[in-house]
Length: 184
Image 1: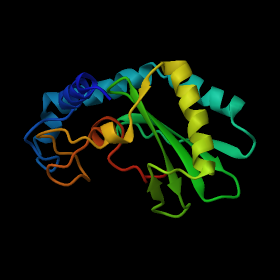
Image 2: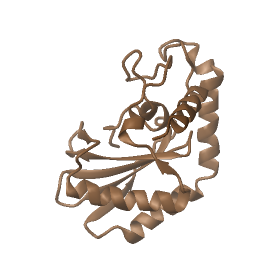
Image 3: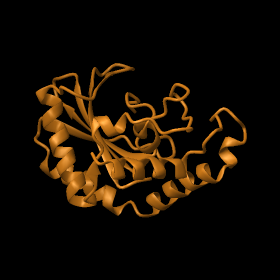
Image 4: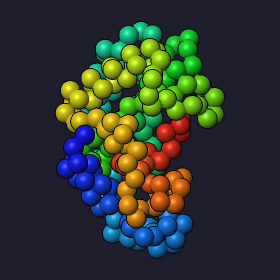
């Protein structure tokens, strides 16, 4: 991770999330940053061919042990989201492609219940295998660089994001999702 890349990602995050204003403030949705984020989703939705290609590649190349599920909820998370569910196990590999920056992030979930456990590091083989397939498809289609866990957990100064502690909004929350265990 270079300091220039990290600084660039923080700057991008600040372009889409207002500084010094809480998401609970009624003026939040009127800020230029919030409106830019909404426009980024509108643009991404109009140009969804690349995302559809990722889904096709995953369906073609994932082993029969996995089931592909598009978890994208436009405007809820600032990313396209896909899951590979490992049949017969409680493991899910998840990949997210930011609609705000040229990055993606993959991780695992353990448990099929309402609030599965997020697995960022030390992934079990069922998650690691699925993540590898997702990373390959995303890189082939988008040619984006992955966001490392260290980069992902970098705090974006002066930005408040819903579900994040004050002063604790991370690049992950700003560019990928503020709720990783949100399984739809």
